[in-house]
Amino acid sequence: DSGVTQTPKHLITATGQRVTLRCSPRSGDLSVYWYQQSLDQGLQFLIQYYNGEERAKGNILERFSAQQFPDLHSELNLSSLELGDSALYFCASSVAGLAATDTQYFGPGTRLTVL
Amino acid sequence: GNSVTQMEGPVTLSEEAFLTINCTYTATGYPSLFWYVQYPGEGLQLLLKATKADDKGSNKGFEATYRKETTSFHLEKGSVQVSDSAVYFCALTFIYGATNKLIFGTGTLLAVQP
Image 1 (cartoon, one colour):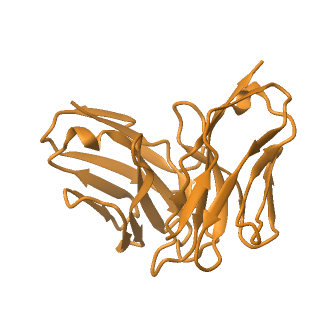
Image 2 (cartoon, chains in turn blue, green; image 1 turned 60 degrees about the horizontal axis):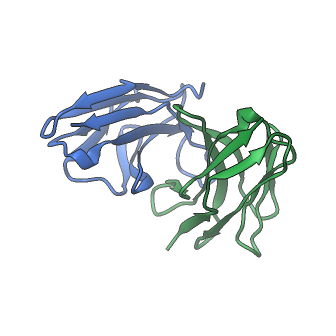
Image 3 (cartoon, one colour; image 1 turned 30 degrees about the vertical axis):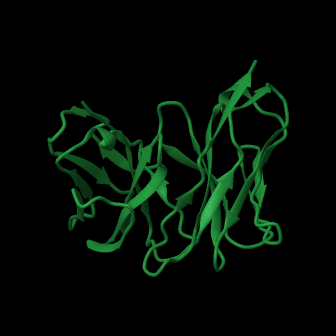
């Protein structure tokens, strides 16, 4: 158990819908990351937050957004869903996310299926 | 650009066999290197890491040495068990502006047969 929690574990929805994925980091960690794992793209970095502020964006679509709240939990919002958004979405956290030596600890993931 | 290349899988071994999964990287600067493991139906778990050249990371019988001269971080284990069956990901990170995002390889599926 990494200490990072994600809910829900599974999500099945229809095209055009909007969903919210939730992540709670390990106690004491200030940085939260979101990654997408799909068969065709592999594991891709989406976005990072540090202590409530957006730190960096990766390959995140404009239909996707995220935020980190004062209690440090984070939510990833996916809207106007398409079939191709079906993937496993991981959240990770690290103590600071300010150094290459920081280790990122991953949650169990949310499997999103868009029908 | 910065990237990680892993050997193609699947790798199929008999129990107690020796394991090597090759990983090479391309990066500017001095990355940290990681191996993560994903067991069936589960999330990613950190297996080991190395943060500078010639460092050896080790955990649960797995080892990998950060070789700057060959830009490699090969994963090895002397005697695999059925319970080691999983997907193994090599990854690197360093500071890109304001982030230390991970860049992953494509993953290597290991299947260990009894």
